[in-house]
Image 1: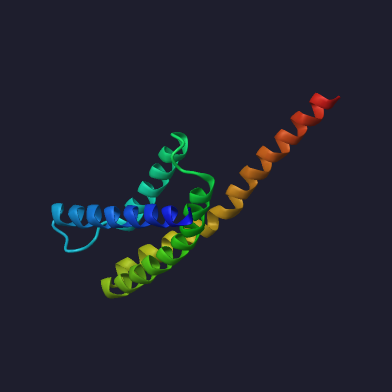
Image 2: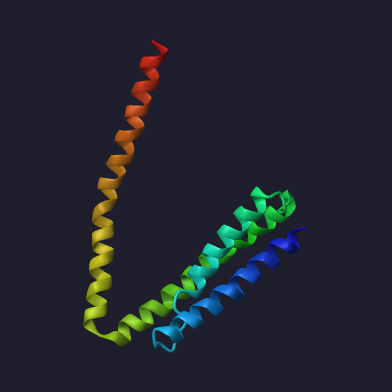
Length: 132
């Protein structure tokens, strides 16, 4: 049932937030440290484990896929908003570091695109040679 997918997602989220809070306390920060990321990793690991052991039927799997596809964009948007607010409050060094990371990422897009195209071209050439 789809509800099992929701229950799995909720359980992973609760566990991830708990672990994130615990990590925050261990390192002396009064914040959740990576709880949402931990929850996503737990969801991936748990759904894969249950699927491999035949405990996650196709309908439940669809529930996990549906909710995780909604969950990821919402959480990323929430985290991005918090990061921007923290960066603005953090001062110019945080803003400069964020800006440089974005510029470097944009600069690497053409390079990564060429690497992907070169691999696709070489695979096409290899398949054409096999047909000859």
